[in-house]
Length: 150
Image (cartoon, rainbow, N blue to C red; front, side, top):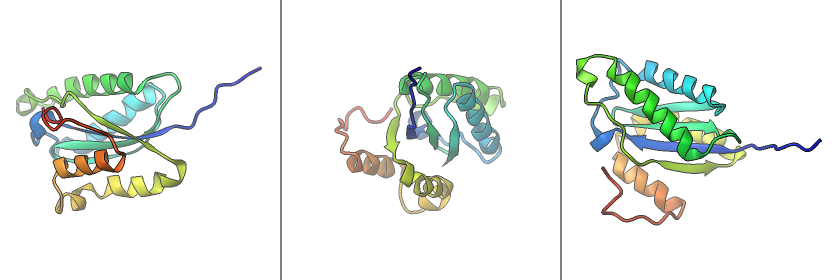
């Protein structure tokens, strides 16, 4: 019997709409846990989830049963609804329309885990916009500056 075997890891990055600071310390741990549950439900094992008040980083395996865009649609839709249940202060919460998804080799996993864990310290030195552009440049992804932010 033939098998379909995969081992795909992806580092996903996306921000809140207009990089609003909605991911407060009050909801951050619960949000990241909620994200992990969604990922597990769609068979994309979460490895590390982190971020700061205006964006998230997710390192997870990518299931052979789902496309990257479907993963992001489910994750953003579900978490956006959930965040809005956390009170009036979150009623205007939205994620940005876009995202970045970057392949990660098995030997890079520990480095990415540490990178995601140290987001708070990292962003004392660099903005989200500069960080994101550095990913695009590192992976040689062409982009149009006019449409990169929403």
